[in-house]
Image 1: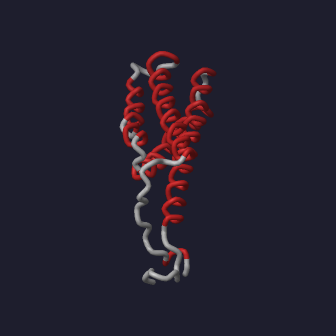
Image 2 (image 1 turned 45 degrees about the horizontal axis):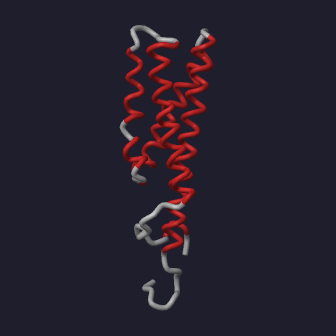
Image 3 (image 1 turned 60 degrees about the horizontal axis):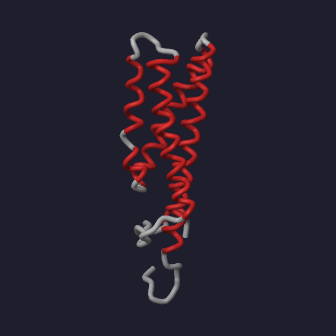
Length: 145
């Protein structure tokens, strides 16, 4: 059977996360929270631009924290996409800002956003692998093909 013709995965009936899932969740939560704090500190105290109105960019990072903490798969998926906005902003400001501190903060934003992305992607991969492993194998007695 081709990869695209696989039947949809049934949600796992496990009640406890694995150690790897817990680790990736903790790293994702810590990285997203650190990124939000970095954005706030950067725009309000360390190297503010204007009147600190860019600090509002930290608010979208606080919204997914409850979903990440509760192992919500949908949250891990959309956060992993949203984080690339922070990578892009950090790379632009890190490479073009004339102030050394602001450029350093931009590269710090890139590192934290990539760390959060890797943790979210690892979490999704672990959960999908666990769901695949819990599926009955094709052609086994008692399964419908």
